[in-house]
Image 1: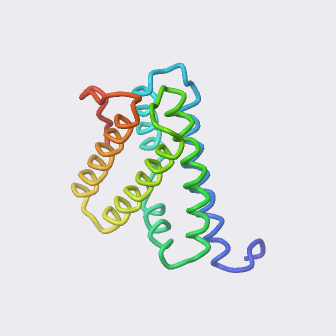
Image 2: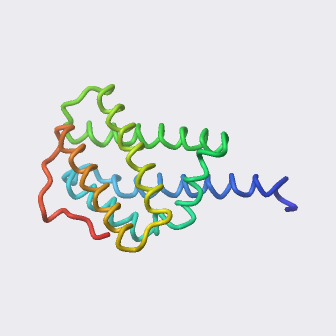
Length: 159
């Protein structure tokens, strides 16, 4: 408490650090744009798993967004940053969509992520695995729709 004015300030700091960690994982996975997009996203899902994203803490924090305006604002900033990264990598790999369409696609992916996190919060291990796999399947379909690749069974992430 000597460094933070309140418990809530500690929560905000932890949440911000978790969001920045997620962006760092994405950046690490996408730092070599000479790799085929299939490899980039496979690496992204693997690095997320290695980094423990999402953890139980992430699930709790992300579900608190609905009850706290500052957490919601922090999430919006994070999603804008992540959307810009999605758009950049998809365009670098030949997406046929406009920036507006890619932004709409990214927003859709964020909403799916919110739903997945809500479902996972109180789910069994088997249910969490199913929710995560289904979300990944939908993400791959959306990436394919952007014109950058077609999913192959060899790319299925380990969850």
